[in-house]
Amino acid sequence: MKRIALVMGAALAWPLTANADISYNYVQADWIADGEIDLDTNVPGLGNGSDDYDGWSIEASGAVTDNLFLLGEYNDLSFDDAGDADLTTLGVGLRAALNPANGAADVYGMLSYEEFDSDAEGFGLTGGFRWVPTAGVEINPSVAYVDYGEIDGTSLDLDGWRYGIRGIFNVTDQVALNAEWRTHNLEADGGGVNADIDLENEIRLGARFYWM
Image 1 (cartoon, rainbow, N blue to C red):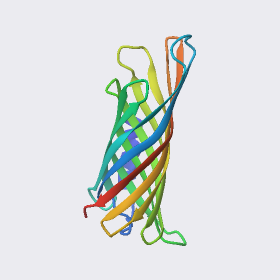
Image 2: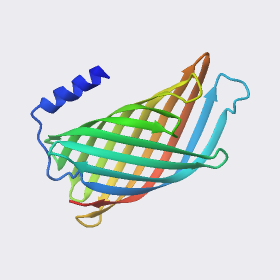
Image 3: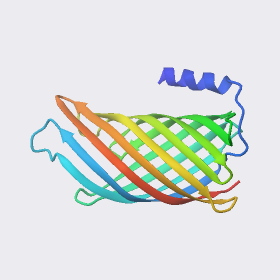
């Protein structure tokens, strides 16, 4: 964690610029239309296999300065055969403008608190790219490393990667529709137990409101 703090401190001191065409002030609601969880463990009889899920999420972002922003996201997942789960992200990030040949673009990084179903909590490091190739259209790929720490009541540590790509399509200056593909590749291990937990191929559809 000391290394992470040093990296964030150095980034804060870097001479960044902001892109006025890309807003970090918004609230977004998504329907998680479809997803699949795959479980693969070395423990016989633990329930290896797959299950479908759907759900919803709410996300909010706010710019503190031209280059510093806060972001929060809550996800509620409902599995067909295995109950429910929730995932929470609370982060602080930095942005910097690029100068592409077409449109406007930002790169950003974020340090976050991460919680998995109230049973494990830790941190995440996210990197992403926001590109507006033409007015009213944004493409946003991102990748995150998440370390949820030890799962309560077990000796298992849970960590892994989260990937996604999002498309934002403005209806007006303040309202946009969005579509996203997202995948989590997580691993739980400890005490001789190893389990791959993949939340795969999520399809998210929703709407975003820019409040400034």
